[in-house]
Image (cartoon, rainbow, N blue to C red; front, side, top):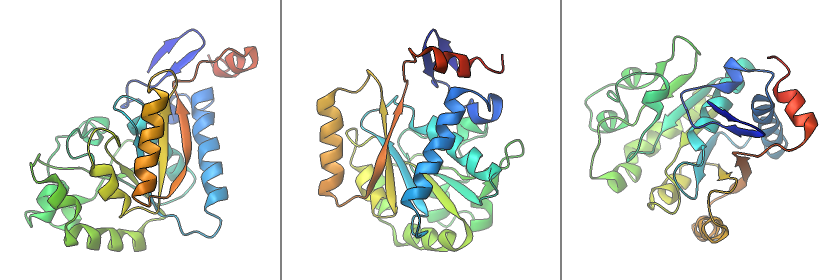
Length: 233
């Protein structure tokens, strides 16, 4: 994680700030995001939550991994799924090769037991994207993928899906058909207002359920925020 004066930037998505700096402002923000999700999910119908953004580099993978860690610490059974098939990152988070993933599973090369793994350090359950393919749309529309999601819904409290940026490719729209709702990540002073609006409108046209927006790369000007952020130093 990079630190700058009055600024929290989770550029290194391999760094789980909720684990390493549990008293930081960034970690507290993750907890508040989950509290807001619980308010939205009072009837427990939201299981598959897609995390996406308008553009690349807005911190969606960092948010997803930190949410997964906090949920796991709260006793929830959570699975992270990398459906960013063009630019996958989950394997880098757990420092493993991007193999034995969804593309291999859907091709019948591995079993479901080989597909779902557990990280030894964090205890997070995860599914990798697998070897790259040019048939991304075919994979996202595959009946076997839909059946897989129906199965894991029965086994996990939450499934967090890392999805590509909305404006980069149409993949996020296909993934929204598998999810119950979308957490829309917006990096402060990064994406332009027109980009943010266009992405939201694109999701709405696809009848996607936008649960809310999470602001990342927030500049902290308040003294109280700075005090909280440095509390455990």
